[in-house]
Image (cartoon, rainbow, N blue to C red; front, side):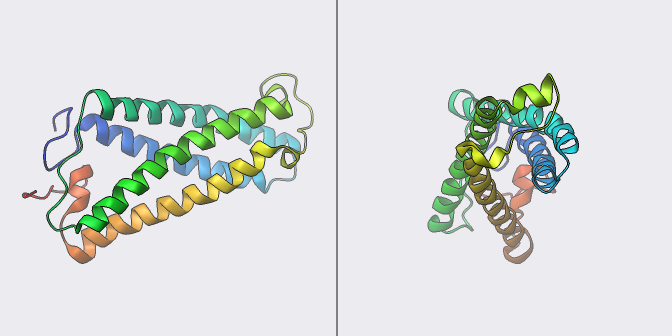
Length: 182
């Protein structure tokens, strides 16, 4: 697979960024929901000690991905089997996914700084403050639920195309044989 995308398939760099981001976001969702439902401050801090750097890594991957698209690569052509309205919806969802990932990282970093939790998690230790008393926590939660909905829609659309339409859409992202036509 070439590094850059072809008319029918995403390149190896875009594919690697996509799947690595997907795995890290899944880990972040699990860790975030676990931390939010953990009453023990020390256990929550231990989870956040992993959650925060992985969130920064996802931010870096997202920024790299956007720069990759803007400066070095182009997306494959829209598939002929996909109606224009669905192509427009897919573009909108992708844009919202990038925006949500950036907002999650920004609100997470703002929360750590504003609440002093960063020092507790990565420095002096001690009990965490009540994070819900800080606006970035509310933003992080709302955007997080929105992100999960976007991901569910994204995955559902990919499965719909792969298994119901049968247009081998997942092949464009490295799973199976790519479609042969535009």
